[in-house]
Length: 386
Image (cartoon, rainbow, N blue to C red; front, side):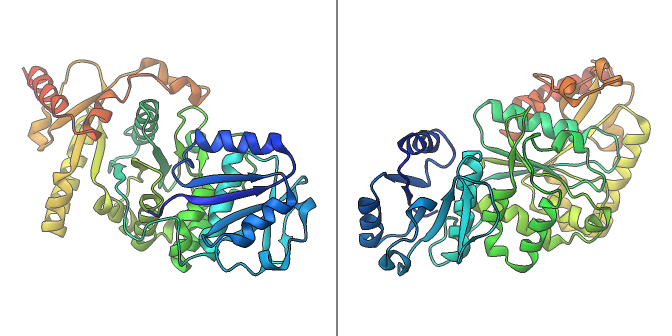
């Protein structure tokens, strides 16, 4: 990760500059941007002309055209700040609507810089330290989405930086829709896949533009794919590129992926890339047998790779009522944590009614390496078999 980048705002409106400065100091952009504000045209352009370091210049449209020496700068980039919302730009310079949410404005500025200043990227070239958690089950309806979203919300509430998104063939859109005022087109994920395949070096910046803040969980999310045909065309390289881009952004501590129940090649690549795989499973003989058969098929088909996958697999007893009718160990399944049974979920009108504090406590402990959960789960399992 490079050091903080200079961001220069040239705008005669002091209130906007103060608002932008306060936002940067309290946001995820604080480690990356050092804001310089200029309400004097002469001082602002003198700063840009004399600076030898890369600068992202945000120049109000009323200050155009800038001096020739500003046009001639070879480091950094320039964007135009406009009072009106419009598409397009002046020459090669994008136009940013001044009164849009500031996180979107800064994400667009970062994306433009990354695209045109590839020699000094905002993002590192190696994979980041973010932990990748896949929430998986070979059986549909096992509670993957509810688990993924509750886990993301739990970690975000504890101050962690979390990205959570779905790779399901038929996603639970109600959980992953962006805020009502976000007018991004529905092909957001499709555009990310385009960059993953054609210009992966731009993917971290494009991903930052595509993210939104989940209204309920307060974590970052991505809108899912809308077309089943696009899901069918997902490749392992797409998944690897997306996960690497999220890690390289330096924005996240955890990346949580709500996986599909299939064993398509793209889903298996997700499991390979994951640091931890959480598998919700009910006390149901059909689910237990299917899960056992899946694990055995992996062992026969993939050998050493299957061993590595099974080593990072952790089962969560979903819809736990405090007792078990089945012997999980008879299916070679060791339970590492619990997810409670919530009778109110039998009939739900809105997903807002389903976000329950404490639902993902055990899952979060596993993510953080909580051995106590596994020890307690072993005791619970013994009690259930007694």
